[in-house]
Length: 382
Image (cartoon, rainbow, N blue to C red; front, side, top):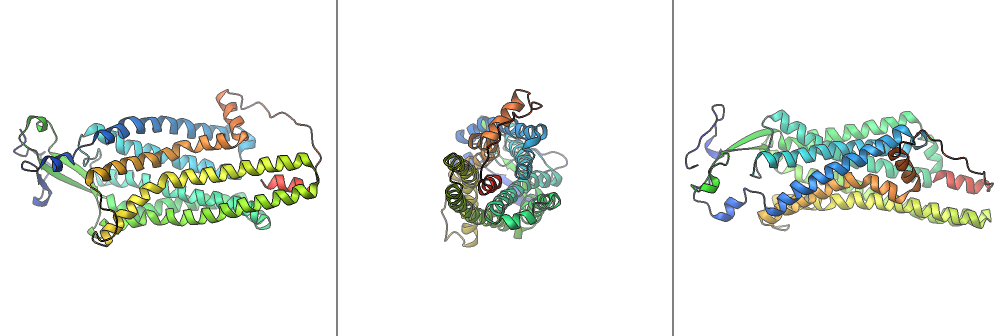
């Protein structure tokens, strides 16, 4: 039985780290275990997301690596986004799935050193913040190409693009290390005294968790997780609206000046395809992460206002929302390649070439169609 505490020789629990559950009510005890919904999300959803995420993002990396015409500046940003997604998926699945398999309690992790805590959460948050930065760079690149073509020509140098990508990675991990990850840098070991029932007989009496390096950090990260997301959401919405308006106006003007019905139809099709890609990519990214940051923002409101502002959730409800939100955020890293192929025929053809091992096959030569210079400029900018 667990009425007495049996500890490892190298483990010392202070008085405030001993949790006596012998006389606790069943509701408080159940809070230490995963619910059925938690187990379904962790044991079913996360493995599926891992498999499809690795296959999809890996296939996109192969597409860009093997097919020369896919090595564009936009795809260079998307390649880095795919790498960030892979890091995020690997870290998230390990942190959730392996931890659950090792211990049935929700407050026990699989790593028990400060290095493990620091590396794990830095990988999760660093890759996510880098993804946010890449979303802004993608929107900025398309905004300049379509709305500010003269300025875009001044910023298309490969060295400048590489510098922006490096800065995005640096921002993601420095922001994580300095403002968010310190919330999880210290290993905290709690010693549990379980009730004297047979169902608790074989449970571990020690749980391991990652806690802040200083009590001041306990409130800090919940708000700091939301700031880059909110900034990127506002910036991307503004630039995407400008892009769609510009595409609509330009296609009508160029089609009327070209006096070519065939070009008018092609211009409308290209405009709609680009608009679908922009809207879908942005909506899925921000939509998948919005619930998690709303939950964290609500936590920050409750903490900073001492519970006067915000929604007070029960612990079981909070955990269900937490796991659902983390699975939804991980799903975003999985569906990006699907979005590319679903909204753009070039990506579909490129994926098909890679899956059928025909990436060395050259694209067929099409008959050259003479159109006006205005039409040529319009299509090239898309």
